[in-house]
Length: 178
Image (cartoon, rainbow, N blue to C red; front, side, top):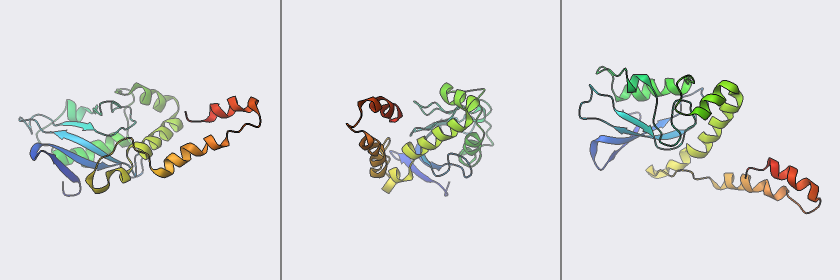
């Protein structure tokens, strides 16, 4: 695991965080996630528990808990697999090829099947907001933090509101991100 930043939880070798970069050539590229890993006493005969700590929009990852729905981890685990397989193969494949037929996130699954372009845009917005590598400066993990530039962008749409024409207020407010 030398290619990954790994932080132990209270010096416990069975519980740690791995900082995982989004796979190249996917909408997750450029993102950085902190993944919580718990190794059971029965490892390698029993699979580790894996969960994304910062939000990710994906049909097979629960947005609230970060739980991952991946057969090879949850049901088809083999003692020949190791932690390296999870981060080098299983998670990159999951992010590259979502299985919308077996969702943990119904909204992501529905959007993926119904409007793939809108799905990709939502993924990219989550990456920008929740998986921005800047939020991991000096090993710190800060969730839901917007950069000053993002806050300025959000506020810039408010400056377009004026008192010139009250009839236009409803139309402009409908376009705002409230």
